[in-house]
Length: 402
Image (cartoon, rainbow, N blue to C red):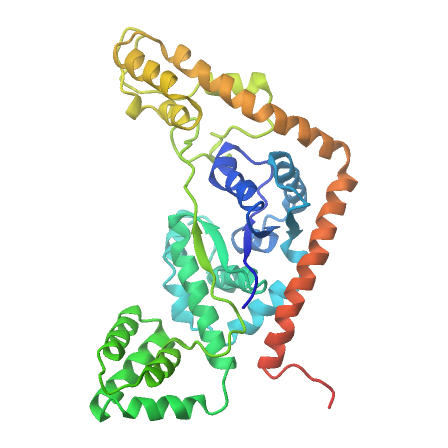
């Protein structure tokens, strides 16, 4: 019904690092040549957890866009824009919030997890609770049918699909559809019809997936239903009436396998990251001081690459011959840790040098970066506006003036 389209965003944390590149940006560069793509700076999302630390948002946003461009995001292929410059994101978030059950937001796995991890902050806010809803609106407002995510983001994708389904169910009503569905349900028999309706309510109001599966199984096994009756009841169960908002699918991408310098997840806040614009001397110093297998206290101690964060860099950067050299040399103490790290230093420097050259071109011409983003914002507003016209009309907010 709508063209293939990918949407993805990233919070403005400033200059990006290798974890960002291998975890997301590298995939974006590939995707932009395969399907229409929109990539945005999620500055409103930054406020959901850092609402009291707004001083660096604007600077971080521009730094991040420069790194995107330097890493290969092409404004001729992809639309680059800033979330807060496209007000339709906020409008759809607000309108969808009117019908979103609180229980749906509270059951998102990352909600309680983030509250525990960021216990030093007060996250008992409406904005933080509702961030999965805003995340859904970011995608649904463009009727995107694909979102590049890792496996850890699948719960967000599921609630995104459920919210689109619920919206379509509530506002995409076909005249007389409810009556048709109820007539079809009667053909199940009184007892089964009653159970079907109870399961439907459990799914529609509480998001009970088990109830959904039971209802589907009932319809599949109901010999009393015609193909048409079954199709009507599937739609009644799922809420798939007129498709105002598109249910997006997850475009699974491989998670970054690069650890930070200390073996933890690479993060600027942990101080363990290699930035995309680090110079050769900085890269060399950082990698040479990387944590290695703790069993190798002395140069003559054998080690185990599988217990060493440096090995994960070899998995990403090294050819098979080098990997074999590392495995044999480390386990036999035939090579030292500094020797093991040198091919990684060379590979990272080689990968980042062309990005850094491109970055300097954009740093020298900030007006060019702003022009690229403004053009992207204009295109994003146009696409989002088309969706919002249908949303407003469906919700009785069209106001044609008649």
